[in-house]
Amino acid sequence: MPDETPIRVNLAPVVDVTMSLLIFFLLSTRMVERESSTRIDLPVARSAQEKDRQDLGNRFVVNVRDAREDKKEGVEFIVEERAMSLNEVLNRLTEEKRIQPDVNCIIRADRTLPFEYVQQVMVGCGDIGVTKVTFSAVPRSSGADGL
Image (tube, rainbow, N blue to C red):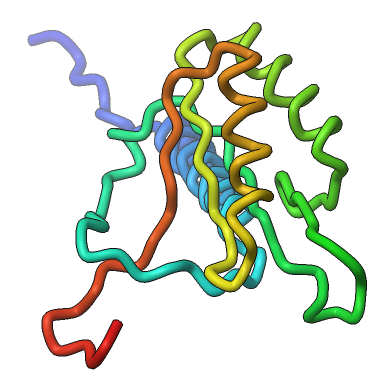
């Protein structure tokens, strides 16, 4: 009868995969937080719907914030937690479109902000050739009074 070889379980590959998954989820969570960490009072819309982030595809999130809250003038355009001018935002969007032709520009704008600032981003998207534009809004609850 041949000698029996003892069976050994090598846990090193399991630990490697587990650590890789942990790092991936930590980084992806951080990226999602960066998109919506800017304090913005989103508008309320009856037709607003919850969307799965995967349905939105390749996202480029532009936060348009009323700077008067911080005693500044005008508006702040914020991408990935960094305040930029409109030209800088459009340059970044142009680069993103070059890398990802089907990029979806998501505009998160403060509800008190005049529409002209949102319109500037929309016109810029059109000039660049971005055809997917999504607006962030809060769904109106069925019990909301006067909203």
